[in-house]
Length: 88
Image 1 (cartoon, one colour):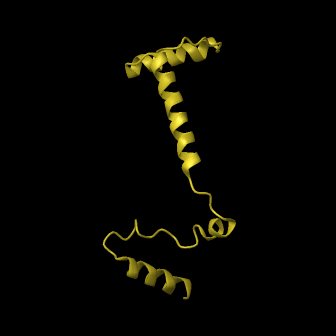
Image 2: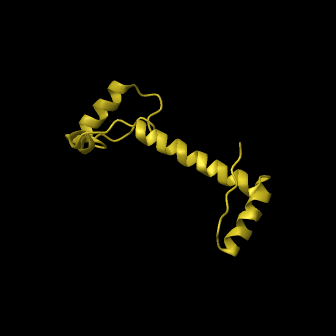
């Protein structure tokens, strides 16, 4: 069941929003509902995240993500390259 929502927003914001909705083939109501759904989903994901201890947060980023740069290299070679670079 739908709910009627009354908004008080700046006229220029409303006009620009209507143009964007028209370009996307949607109504402003659909855009607002989609935005609310995205906010709800984001909040659900945040509430499901496991909190990290300060120690683990400090470790994050200590080893660079080189895997994306080395497509066909296995994990052992990535670690070896990192250790060599670190100690050279």
